[in-house]
Length: 172
Image 1 (tube, helix red, strand yellow):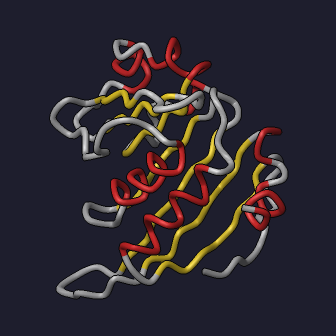
Image 2 (cartoon, rainbow, N blue to C red):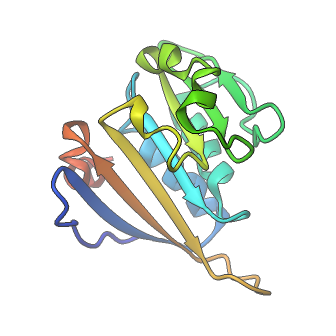
């Protein structure tokens, strides 16, 4: 994996990474977990099959949480309690939710956020109001009839919490 540039947008730091396989995507999740703390909001963006749940499996492994991390598509949200003293992982799939933050409020994510790491797939336009500080993970893959495993992953850290994203990521 290699890092690239910072964005000029105020308060946001961008880091581009190349991921060559599902194993590397899971490894990336474990690395990102090393940066996470209770109260962090992580938003995952990417097409179906891009690797959002694979990355979240790595996050769960890195955070040391209980239970297999699988897509919460049909249950909307799953809570994975910590095996040790770390934060719980709240894994949300907002794909079927269309009502923005109002519908998300029914999940009480604002209650879970201070003590957990909340990861939301398909959360664009729905959960940004939960926190001024958030990490967005954008996963791009080749589209069409291809078996190419290569992905371009862009980490976008918004807010003061993520101002040191490039330096912090290089250290994990």
